[in-house]
Length: 285
Image (cartoon, rainbow, N blue to C red):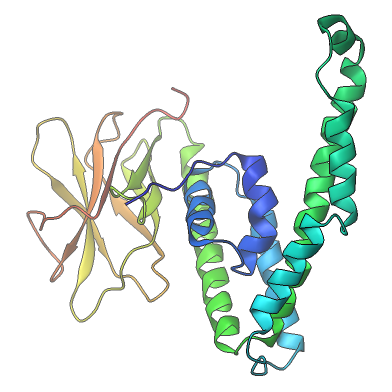
């Protein structure tokens, strides 16, 4: 399976409008999700854009779109961009021409102007993205009502995860705390764990499969070559987000925090496979 490309914070912000209405290609959707899961920046703009999209859907009654509407809209958008009818395209072409190859001395003399051009190009790129968002929004508004429900679910899960991270960060700010980023091999499950100096553990996870019946997720602490010690059980709902508090026998850096899915509460040995794991470290280290 191809790994999602790694985004910078600026790239994630640029893609946020299209991400909020699910107008990105699957690979780009995965890349944004991966960035949000591991970034120390909360990226509130992503949540705000999602809330705005939901509000838009709330104000317009969903209807069945005419056959071929999506393909016609996207084809028209692509034609406008390729033929230069959108203002940002001609402006971008001018910007490229203004920084054509020159002698080293000429480049040095033109440096201030080039810096301005790069900043302006960034603004033009944002404008082009906004224009594409407008096209995608038309498609979203006329889509079936299922998107509204799905978007609400994703926004609720994102808010629950962010709230859990904020609570964990409160503990991480206390002296003697250690932190761990937990994930599985492909990054579909990820989260954040903090162990306080007194052994208090706060876990926030997303991407987990919902528990059913008597199933629970069990958190384990593993120090060195020692046996895994169960430190807490919790259940997970349909949104895949979980926040849990546990108690660890160790608050030393270098311990492993791990999650397993168990058939019932009270497991004394982990049931493989490991769902997610991470190693604790000093936040200042």
